[in-house]
Amino acid sequence: MSAYPQSLTNLIKSLSGLPGIGEKTAARLAMHILNGSKEAALTLADSIIQVKEKIHFCSICFNYADQDPCHICSGLERDKEVICVVETPDDLIALENAGVFKGTYHVLGGALSPLQGLGPEDIRIGQLIGRIKEGGVTEVIIATNPTLEGETTAAFIADQLKDMSVSVTRIASGIPMGGDIKYTDAHTIKRSLQYRTKL
Amino acid sequence: MSAYPQSLTNLIKSLSGLPGIGEKTAARLAMHILNGSKEAALTLADSIIQVKEKIHFCSICFNYADQDPCHICSGLERDKEVICVVETPDDLIALENAGVFKGTYHVLGGALSPLQGLGPEDIRIGQLIGRIKEGGVTEVIIATNPTLEGETTAAFIADQLKDMSVSVTRIASGIPMGGDIKYTDAHTIKRSLQYRTKL
Image (tube, rainbow over all chains, first blue to last red; front, top):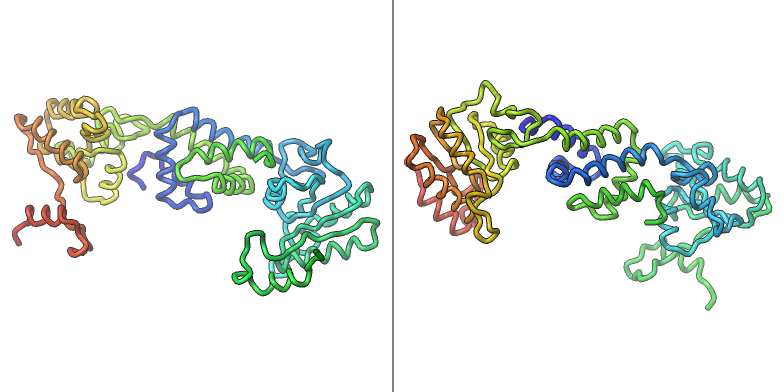
């Protein structure tokens, strides 16, 4: 790499640190930035700085936000009586992009995982209970992933909330829309039969 | 995308502008930057700015450089009597990484291409002739690509220099090391026979 000027070497090194970006790709990206307009480069640099400086956790739902409370928690059109519990901000984004849920969220920041040593105190279950204790919440939809950790987390949260005057529901899991039964794993088929609905 | 906070949306938009980076990849990179250390992010942002502010063309060889003359042209250990002519800075990097050439370079910034409307005045042939007229150059190695444009450019430069007291050579072209004759194209085989060397 010493064949590159120092500042170009530095940029390639920084870009190589990003996930899925090898040294050759980093070099290609660096050359693109170098050959591209100064505006585009400065905009990119500034947006990186802005993200680190402006984005924080929403103090209510713990989603990433550049205002507090976040635009969802502070949204007048959102139903504050329903809280959808997710593991990560990415899950929240996926649900938002589906565009059907009009309630608010609660981002746990992970799922219970004895293997990774993640217990109830490591994810934001206490904060969820706190929100419910404040009142005004009628339903908690648990949208953790249908994985061992996600299911365990859902069961744990349901147990924690069982004595509170709030209905706890779990997102449906089964064969995905457009999916093919013959290519669907046994666990999913079992689940889809177990939770079959009346037509 | 509206589900993301504004500054995150901006970063994703900027990253999507890079070659081979789609919106999903950009989102993954943005999340990595967001979750990563502030130092790493600021280093990346700074290195982008540095590249745009510090990197210029070397006034002698027209390679990218953050000093003028570049570290090769100003290198005391480099042989100033030999100039290796390349099409692009990337070609120069490849030659440098091979680690065998100890002379200096001249980056044309392209090759003659009637189809793309690139004539002798569009690439730095005049500057090359200027360097040779200054004297002290004994050999010019033409390392343009063995393509139609590269060969044309090599022939043109050789013609321009024929009356000057400098030996003009062309990099060898043939079957690549580790290559397989039965998978080698006819042009390459023809060239390898035409320029066969005595053992």
